[in-house]
Image 1: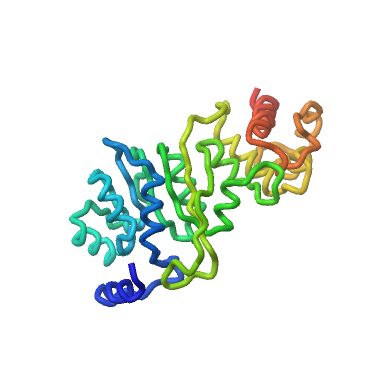
Image 2: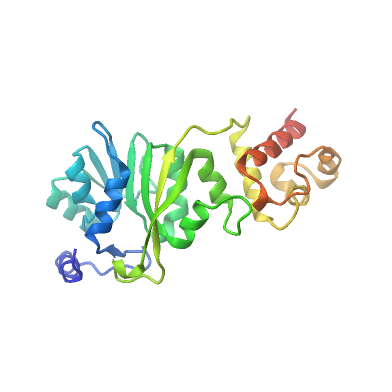
Length: 270
């Protein structure tokens, strides 16, 4: 899609791209085609596209299947997709809509909601997701334990899916040109590798450890006794056998954080 074509369509719709809502429109048809091909859409798949915009991905998806649900927050763009492609479009906010029940998700996500929408998608479940992110976020999402980019969102993602960066996308492929480059990430959903007795507490422990990732595990937990519903005086004597007590969060794979979480559950709940 040429820049002049994008400008013309936006002009007819009375839209000025919003920086606040990360409205940057992909220009490259080749990149859009590769995104859709990477999704591996199969017969019978139910497909979701979030934020179709002017349809650069949508038309390639519809070449593969008509079983597609589009969610577009901008009512002008929602109307455009609905009319241009005779498509089923929800004019609403993906942060509020039901995202469950889809086999494949394809989206060029607004940068400002990358983390929140990814969490919602992972919790909803899917077989495959092909998502465009700001490069920095994509690197965090796919990082390995021990790297400087390993973070809370990495652990959350690993609980629900495998991930790989399949393509870097220079910022010049967008209109308006954003300040940063992007990456296409492929997520393959899987069953959680372990089953916490209290999943909310597991993710609470993840949050505590990465909020204090330069502290040891023991010191991070002691510093957040209020969140754990206890006191320092009560907790400290119970941590004598805490696994990986002297490690730091950025070195711990999810399985080890799970062991820590189960230990904390045992000493506080049993």
